[in-house]
Image (tube, rainbow, N blue to C red; front, side):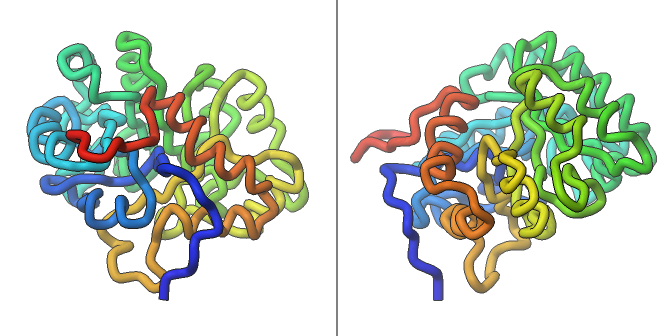
Length: 284
């Protein structure tokens, strides 16, 4: 049985999930799996890239009641293949991606760059990051950034590359990277926040650790945004993986209710430049 929602708002904003009606290996129908649980705006983490964004707009964005905005994948193929989207470095074509952003800018809020081992395969994550930053700077958009494990590339070095307004996701993960030690948030993470870098939950299947959340929140480091990373592997879970459920987990970890509400309404709305409300009878 789904747990009751203790939060009462007009509409929730999920910064990081995988809304897609087709052509994404992670995609779920946002009207079926998000809207019934209060999410009226959702951000896609890289489900489409320059080569398939037109189809994504036609079949997902234009066909959904939920307001979908895309963090365009730096890879031209997006998340359309079972292989990591950056395994072929030639799929990161800076000019092609910037041109796609210019053509479809009203549907795009950021650039998705995940330098994880899964996404990159044997490709050098530093090269992926370099090209992703080229795209983001040329298009004047923030990054939605997934970190690399520190034994490959130190977190401090990764975070120093980020700019004010860039968003680090999976921020309360335990492994393969972690932003806390046994008692506090790491200094490099605090330095990034002081420079204006933002931090997102991206709960996913294995990207939220309650003890990491407790340590960080106790150290007065709450996430800027709370998101589900809802994807196909969550469908059928009990309890159902929803944004209200993730909000409850943050409440249990000690995050104040008012801050939780801000993290699923005004802050992600500002980042994606959207309104959380859907007017009755409005077109998507």
